[in-house]
Image (cartoon, rainbow, N blue to C red; front, top):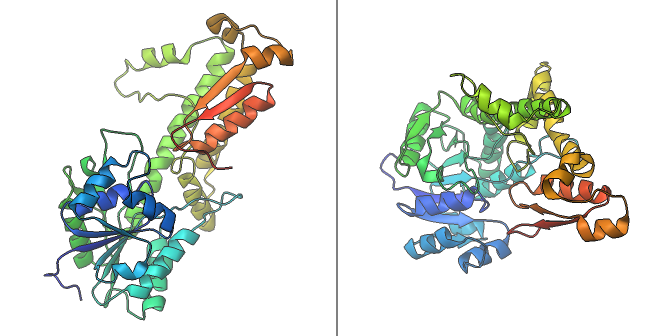
Length: 363
């Protein structure tokens, strides 16, 4: 049973771009611990030596505690897991971080505790994979001794308007009672409230739907860009004209990178295939967007408007290229993988290319 009178003591597992602001937010009102397996990251956060660390510094002053020792979280009664859920080289879901974090929490799980997942996963993973792992590790029974929930993260790095406290959060729980408590917890720190989903699977699915829709929308505009480019039509002008229709939804063509939109559709694609559905639209959108970097690199190399707009002499002479064709790709954090792809593709075309960003790219 859940102790309705307990005071929330929060433990956030994973101090990345999701977990860190989440821990800072909850620390404004509750006793909060932030945990990460990487001791070096924890040390940098604690010393405020990481880039743009101002929110963390303020949270630390207000009582936020950081650690790389999971035992420090033993007194917490709500654990929020916000760890990466990438895909492997075959674009199959890699849930190893979620499994590892779940096993760690299972070691310290107590009677009446609640575990909430924010990591993006396919529908069913929380109850079919994570909850059984918590039970086997802790020796406790789901919905009798402990409870689980899901609240999909909606962090948009670099967005100063839709910050974590200024968005609506979807919540859910493994029982109606757990769902109500989880919803009340999030609602207590958000200015725009919450939406309590009818089930954990619905909450899991809604995050995938959000990002798949965005991926498809961008893929449509990327395809329009390629078509109109061949016809010497400016897509920005077409979009401006089309936007006069009341139900037209504009978007900007370009690279799709980062940890969400370029990854999450594969979680639904793979799950759809497991239930014998061919997700042709999702797969096509991914293919279109993944090819955009190749197309853009080709444009940089071959398009005549480069010469006309920037007054650059088009040539294949390496000596001239070294002097006149020096290109910088800006942005290596949230859309790092596409930035590095662009760098490699542009370099292959014979250009000198540098990557710039506030974070050093990984090799």
